[in-house]
Amino acid sequence: FWIPVLLAILLIVHLSFGLRMHHLIHTDEVWTMNIISDTTTGLLHSILTQDNHPPLYYLLLRQWTAITAAGIPMMRVLSFIFGGITLAFLAIFYRNYKPRELTFILGLIATNPLFIYYSATVRPYALVVLLATVLTVCALRLRQIDAKAANSMTESHLYWKATYYISGFLLGLTHYFGTLYVWLIVI
Image (tube, rainbow, N blue to C red):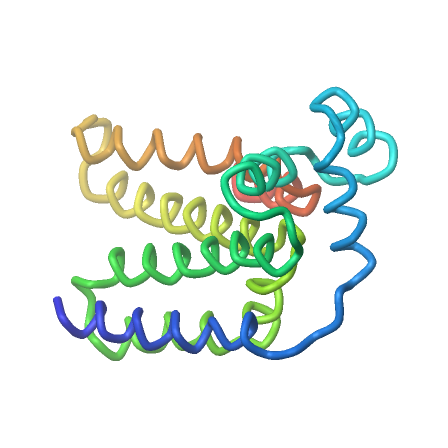
């Protein structure tokens, strides 16, 4: 129990490096900040006509800015939270595996420079990684369950199946690459 928890905490602290390092405000971040300050109808219209990403991230970010301050540094924290949840999800899922497998999976994700960067920017990429991770783990888990118990629907099977479909649906609403990934994993 303590190995996954300790490892996840250390890697989340490492992930926070992206928030702590100085980097300039990107034009996409300014565009996103301006877009979410519009009305819901205006936000959806702008996203659908000016940006090619589905609206889930922007709607979540809008709610986040209603709770917190609307500045870009505070908006970046939402991406960091998505990155932290990704690591926590993997730590929880892999807690029953061998410690070296857990360390490899978490280390592979958490030390990726792009994962650190996107966990500190105001764009939907950290949410895409979170939802794609959940979708992939659910798909793999369902394959394991189906291989062991053909045609038997247990409570665990229903849980993984529901999580699979919900994460796939949300991923499709987050990013066009997410939509593509959902189609690929379903096929």
